[in-house]
Length: 150
Image 1: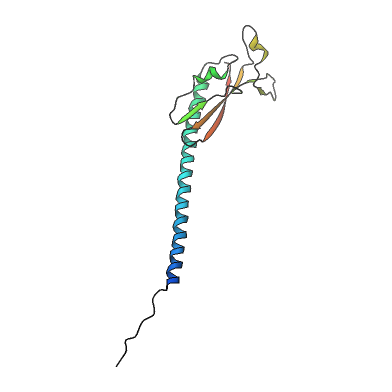
Image 2: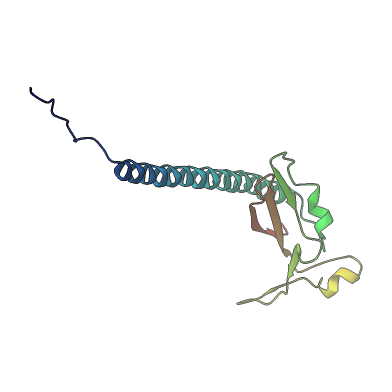
């Protein structure tokens, strides 16, 4: 009588376990890559929003009338409103004044001596620093606007 032959050509438990382990590692790597891409997309979106609103703020400040011996509060009302980005001009150091030195002059937070006299007069050039923080992402950017007396 002929005995049926048994084919032992199947997969062993060790081979299946190794294949599952390799697949699990690959799935985790793909999920990590997707999470990183999502995070980077959110950060980039915040940077783009902050940049766009900052440039609008720079244009608004440039279009505003020059105010002698201005403070941060002087230009805050010129800033555009946005639900995506919070704009601010720091109360300390947000507006700096040119020291009047030609050929390498500096900007200083201390108002020039003409700001205490009558009529009030500075040296005719101000540096206004505007900061933007994108809502939800915390991405922050800053732009400096130089404003000259006409």
